[in-house]
Amino acid sequence: MRSDGIRIDVVTIFPGLFEPFRTTALLGAACSAGIVDLRLHDLRDWTSDRHRTVDDTPYGGGPGMVMRPEPLVDAIEALAGPRGKDRTARVMLLSPQGRRFEQGWARELAHERHLVLVCGRYEGVDQRVIETAIDEEVSIGDYVLAGGEVAALAVIEAVTRLIPGVMGNPESAETESFQTGQLEGPHYTRPAVFRGFEVPAVLRSGDHQAIARWRAEQARNTTQRRRPDLGRPAGREDER
Ligand code: JCQ
Figure (cartoon, rainbow, N blue to C red):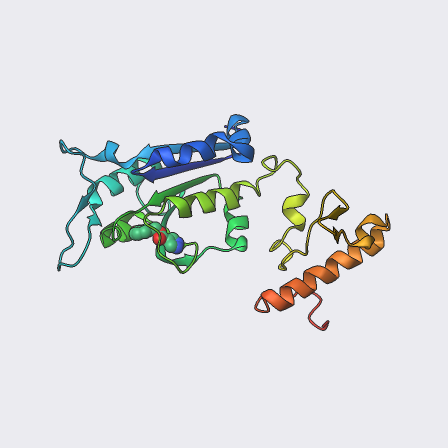
């Protein structure tokens, strides 16, 4: 791995789900270039019974199954060591009960050297895993997934695209939505007329100042209409 890169270990019962993301597009290139060291681990490798069992019935009854603590804690400690001040990795459990994942958190994680993402399945993981081995629980939104894998992929993509050298164009990561705290306005490419709909004339005018002003206004309007909860960029609190 490159010395400024990031190592991301994923613990999952479905490591194959991550393969196309590890080998395709910008993340695939970043892995090949050694900027991102994405390591997939099959949780069942830390089981010791003949059936490689990762789940069991819930104490107290109820529907579904719960993930057994032993394989999860063994896996996490093998990858990150015991929880405590000597641990250098951040061990995160994807969970609807977690703190909401946002761009600011992605920006922070992009500076880390080592993440361990733990994917639960079934009804959840035994609470003692969270208390003994997990550093933080992460939610990507208020809905329930069948497992943590899709949520882990969202975190991996949001974090790694911010690492210098991962995006094709280092500028576009900066100017995009949320980096500015606003939504973006519309984008256009050729043809100049599509099914009778024209590209706004200002974008074809060559007047870069006018284009920048128009884009800023579009971003402001889109944000105000669709996401009035998003604050204006710093220093623009008095504008309407
Ligand atoms: C993450 N928003 C929703 C599903 C159990 C930890 O146990 C479980 C984890 C999951 C996956 O996470 C989510 C999720 N953010 O569903 C079931």
